[in-house]
Image 1 (cartoon, rainbow over the protein chains, first blue to last red):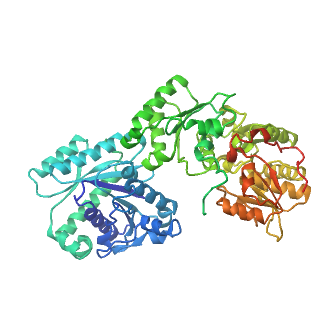
Image 2: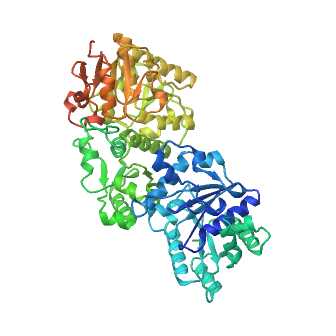
Length: 256
Length: 381
């Protein structure tokens, strides 16, 4: 079982990219579990016709502990096993603690042992703003962290912060850095900026995605590009990225 | 009211369980909590505090540390103190504030171990569970770290006692009585986890032929020893004449056959009729119930207010989650044997027999505590 966590600045396209990777892995015959770690609980929407599934914390809120594993894990397009951690009422509670509680609940109910996925993808909210959002990279969860970035300054800045957090956690047995994913926004010198960022952390750009209207069209259909337009050049880019991510994840510990 | 204690006490929390279990092992125990809370774990719940040294510390967590995630301060403070103290190990565990902040204690322990070279482990206490959860995890961690070598079994039959803390047994000679009873029953003691033995004694645990689990907090460690070394375990406390004899026989059978047994739960409380109610920790209360039934012929029912696996309860035993449930169960009983703090919720027409339990009332009734091990039962019903 390979467990991968995806981080990056809010709005950079993490959920879109992770859902397309899930579709690509699933189309390749792998059993995939995608876990949204964002209080908005919309990570897996494009694997469910654009609708949100009920989150773990929704279930906890309504029924305390009286629910089953298959109520937490819903099967989406291509057979992808979809989970949303969910979060507290906006403006109240603690979202980070919510992520911890949700992931612990998933483990406690035996999700990994029962479904035995080949690949687990954690799609994590924006920055590592508190302890809760480092949960997916803690020991026993993800093995590798991939950071999405564009060439825009704020995105590079956020990516560097996340990479720094991964580096700081090196002594804790946490996930190591698998690499960076460039999600192009057509910013000036975009490839160069991303390459410099990766080099600063002795890492690499494992793959790059172009901005494409195909992705927007698929999202309007509530689908991933890989699922809705499998013959499109964009779907091909996602499949290439999926291969590269797998290869990078299977490599020995990254230097970071 | 559900899950509420308006009148009676609640049991000591998981942090107290960690401190109690590790107290005598020469390790440094650090609870990541606000300054001042150490008195709860180490004074109110700890009869050894004024007569036996131990390295139990509080991190003096501040609001700023919690907000800023100052794990580095905690790690550096522990590493600096460990340099002076040279403990056998370092255990670090949490309280409610670290729970909310999501502090990762196993990861912090890994950093401490890397910096100090001293074995370190993080425990998942939060103050939200009973002492049994903390004591269980702490002892399992000790066994996991230090009982790694498969030693040859001793020539003569031998046993470890697993799960002994003052929270269940006070410091009234009860644990020494269990050791004496073991010897009378034909077993040498290898170690007592964790009262009266050193960490080196515990390192030799794999040399024992059988393990005697005297509290449910010892089951996880006993299971680990069974998995690692094939050592069978028996759960029960030697109280009363006939039950103690049954327990000795079960130990001998286990040592010979390798099979485990929950002797304390080999009862049946499901027959109709009023019974003597015994609320408390499952292994001790189950053993006491079996002893009273065997020696005095009075039917008993265990009321379990603590975490316990289903297999530790006999048919007809009852889980009680709050004082309303306790009060209702007492009203149906022929009598109650319980910590004095239960007395206010016992109906006046139901006879109440006082049996202090340190994990429930701390030091309040310590002078009244009874050593029931290898002594005739003091009651007649």
